[in-house]
Length: 373
Ligand SMILES: [Mg+2]
Image 1 (cartoon, rainbow, N blue to C red):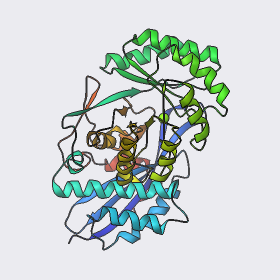
Image 2: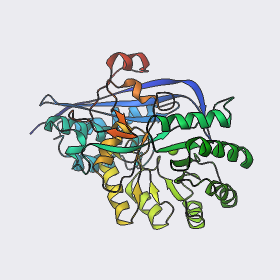
Image 3: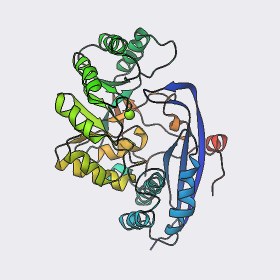
Image 4: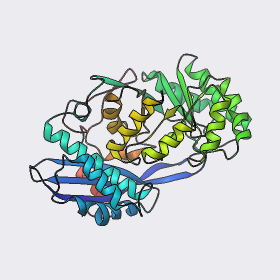
């Protein structure tokens, strides 16, 4: 039986080239926890999670002192058993937030490791549903100082020119007239047949304001409206979902299958966007996706398409992966030695074992705020 000999982690801080504004916050840098699991058969695996704009070391601390030590000497193929053990051990500190992010990063590393040991790309290790590519949507349309609706339209049209037939922009920061000018410029630039997703970044706190905006959105035929309220405000998600025919998508920072079940029971979302880096890793991501299928609900994993393409490819009710076409917003890709190819708006599946990428050691060192330990 192979045995886990080390669980190492490190915190990196990657500044954004330009401060970027969302409806509810501004981001200057991203802190990530990287994880490496080493096994005595010579096969390693890598995982990661996002720890926020600052104090991402809290996640690394959870990996180093709470979760990682539990895995030493254990069989890396016992993924479900190790998940359960880590979850139980972290019941007081974990369940959601930083500790669950640490658990998620370790779980990703275990799946990567086991796929590498089997000599299989991860999507095949998970039981492939698709074998060549998955559909992607291009994500962008952020607020930047001095960015006019015309400039926004040109940006979104640029993604269509790259081959995407679905694009997503941010909304929710400005007043109704200004938001309508932005959305109208984008619809005009991309044409009527391209899917347009609108991401609200938790911008509203009351249902009446949300409905006023969504009535305006409806004129532009959006594919979904994302994160209209705080993730904790399931009641208003449900009210909004009942008031419009537009799909309501949410879940990118939610964790654990129980909370997603509550979301589904309340009909608060018609598309789940759970993210394996925080919902409980690949193991929990798959449980949530299967549960969603039982409710007739589709899934569109949040960001990190380099990793999520494997999960979407092995999940029949997955519709899209979210693709950032450069490193300006989600800059995790700067750490990677390989990027999956995107052709005609589809993300091609790699045939290399595991996740299909490794971290660039020099780049990790450049951004590291602590050493691997
Ligand atoms: Mg989002």
